[in-house]
Image 1 (tube, rainbow, N blue to C red):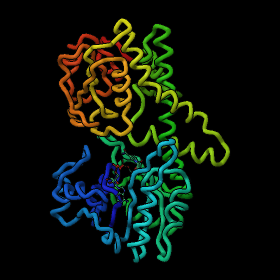
Image 2: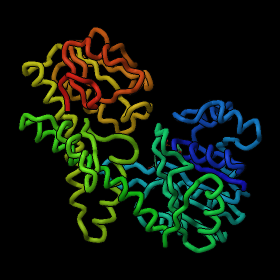
Image 3: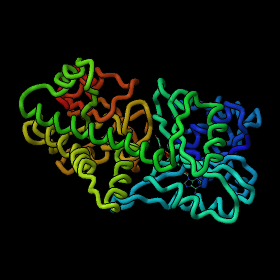
Length: 396
Ligand SMILES: NC(=O)c1ccc[n+]([C@@H]2O[C@H](COP(=O)([O-])OP(=O)(O)OC[C@H]3O[C@@H](n4cnc5c(N)ncnc54)[C@H](O)[C@@H]3O)[C@@H](O)[C@H]2O)c1
């Protein structure tokens, strides 16, 4: 099939590789000139997608990236994979989705299957995308992306894929497209079910992470190891699912998607109280971390050299979106510490560069990448570990 994918970020490029690998002919459309130029010379910006993967598809004529929206016309399938962030008031910002719909409306004159993979609240495909595209008889389906960047066990092929269409013909076409590179396709009765399932999955994680974050604080105050309790609880073979405490939540999904659900819940008059409380707990974790670091340093870190280890939001990825490291660093600086950070994957961030771990008085481990040597961290005078991966030090 001839396929166009709008957005060549984490999701769009992942689907591009799945589709091109399955024999579809893919045009990757993005508004970012530099990104498109890099992609067209086979340079990947996503962990798990190699330059060789891209170069192979380009050489085989299976992939080309473009910033020209006219390339969208003539595709059998158009996938939307654009950002769905929150605005300054933490409400859904669907402006990228709206622009994508406008691009289709303006440029695509031959009928296509239009699939939205961007995460959003139920009703987005129907009311925010399909309703904005008129004059051509397109098919519409929702297939929310579940990719977990950096996860080597679960990828596009073996993660079951939800599909909900506006019509049976849309579902059939979407199954034909995804069936070539996804092992398991689950048809649900409407796009709204697929959209809601995705944001409920992430809300489930957000709420449970908040619960263990609160529990970590309770157990520390009780003088027992929260992680040992959680490990002990996880020995129960049924009815318990382990989650780990940490410095907060980051990335494009867990801190963001539940607020999409809360937004529509409020619109229909059902307050999403768990989401609100979970946001409060998770967003307060950096302050808790800094409070513990100060307490672990006899009540003051003024003038101390502090290195924050790992500023991406999770292990072995370079993604710093919504990372709690930002608040941890800012709050440490407010305490008068001289703060640097170390992250070999991120390298530059917020106008600063990664610094060595050695020479610091205090190390605060926010994210632990596999390549980081625990011995180098432990050589710092005091270590506070938010990851549970450094034995024998202070932490959560
Ligand atoms: N990153 C994840 O792990 C993940 C997982 C599941 C779902 N999602 C969801 O997938 C969607 C995309 O997320 P992402 O992580 O790929 O974002 P991203 O920021 O990595 O990529 C988005 C890309 O879209 C491009 N873009 C923006 N507006 C555009 C437009 N009008 N036309 C063409 N390109 C445009 C940007 O330049 C960028 O390259 C979001 O809704 C997100 O919530 C992300």
